[in-house]
Length: 254
Image (cartoon, rainbow, N blue to C red; front, top):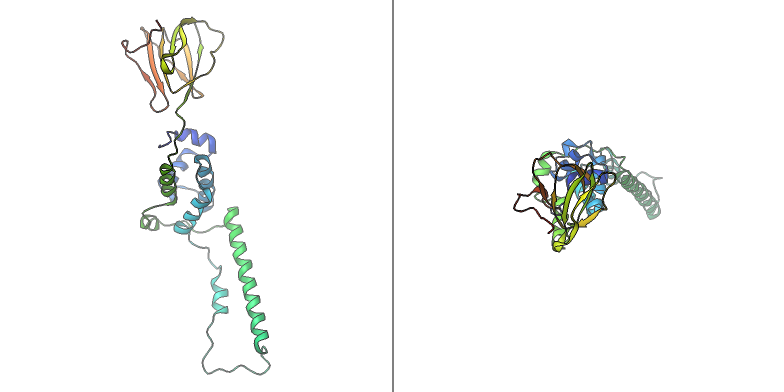
């Protein structure tokens, strides 16, 4: 919203359905397919907005993803089992420090392999940890997404507010199109059907149409002009979209 980007634009750019984008923004993890998709969506969404996708995923995993079952606990329990009191080592056991060092190296190697496997499963999206609970979500006052949005706002990042516009007459139609600084882009002439105008770019357009025999393409999206018995006027900006003008507000190109 701060960058004035419509959710439909992000949906087209990331190929993530709008309802899932809204679920990410609202931290409604239960509406998403699962932790694997959440992390994938977070990375893709962050890239589209210019955020740090890796940091977002780490925040999610830290606060909202419980560890998988049966990972390190059995090994830790066996390697750190306290010795029983009053029990002596039987003759013929592991000799001196050499045996202890070998045992420690073996345990350390196994632990390192398990850690590597966990990292690979997390980054490839193949882990199947349980869904995060809603109570955990309420417990944390700031989430990864809100932190990075605030950081980007502090850096003063703003989105472009330039609008693109082209016209395609379907019949003869009078057009007066004014760009920034009062520049006459179409100086009050009658356009004929059979082609489209060039694509104009400006932060603000003012336009008067003699009738509705024209199709508009604003920021790549077709817009139909409704029928009217009088001249039709529009103000077009990125922030407010297409707004109708009263007869007194319509430009005349004179």
